[in-house]
Amino acid sequence: MLSFMAGSFDGEVEGINDLQAPAEQQHGPGDYTPNIPTTYWTFRLMIGFGALAGLVSVLGLWFTRRRATRSVPRWFYVAVLAALITPFAANSVGWIFTEMGRQPWLVFG
Image (cartoon, rainbow, N blue to C red; front, side):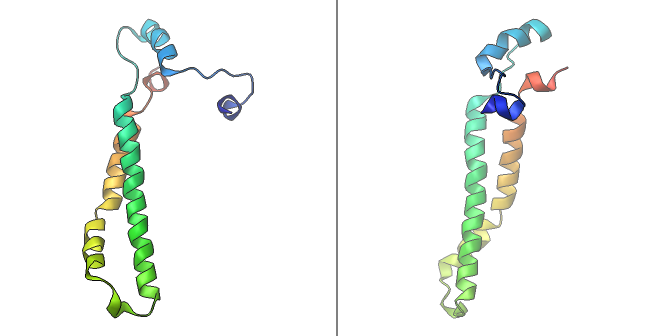
């Protein structure tokens, strides 16, 4: 399916290890592979922070639409205050994911 997304069924999808040698020949010695552990965990953190923000939003909608706002538990107010940073954290971690996972052979040249 990746070759079809690139434009035809005849394409070949190469892995990171297959592209390291040609990148060294073209650009000189160096490590041209993205930092895989960083991209792995920052993607998961980005999705986790976004999901946490969404969960708090859905809970807030549920609590306010019940028409019993006096029965909102106290822990929810603390969770809302703590969740204020989740969009910013997701944005920051997503930026790190994007920049650390950028494939240098797509950027060079």
